[in-house]
Length: 179
Image (cartoon, rainbow, N blue to C red; front, top):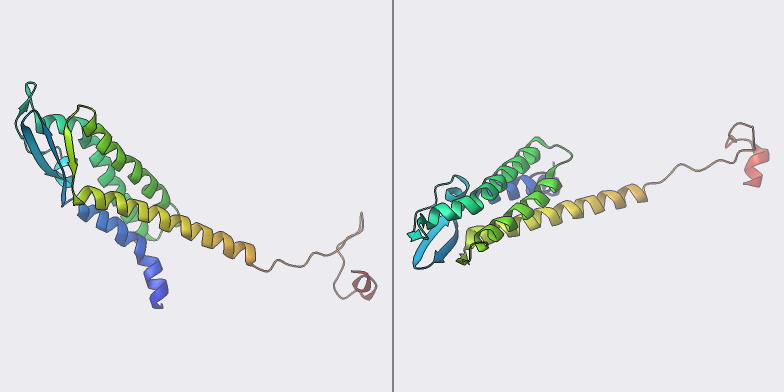
């Protein structure tokens, strides 16, 4: 296997593995009414965001978890599924994982903004979104290359047929002169 084929084979699984590793980085800081909490993607996905202080009778970390932890867990699960599909070399599914990952990553941010808190995005979130977008672009480029390859393949020559007769044989001199 040459280096180009090796890169083509492992590029997508490596992207999904990197997305999973991004969950170990800081994802964001949320502050509201003097309370503040900073969390990683793993803390968000496992419903273990630091408390950060009370906001309207509830801890800020609990509010962040309620609004965004389901999306973070889904995003992490999608990254794991994309990694599994890539490692197994399955022909389909990586593009859908990339698209679903983009959607759930964007929904995480929307969930935090719903209750009017100040949100600062950190490296983990930005890299997660960027890598999902890269995986989607990679999938689209692969599909375009496959379509181009299929369309440029030599198609068998068409043979003329008269109504009700069998296809013309290439060696038949009568029909060959008229084609």
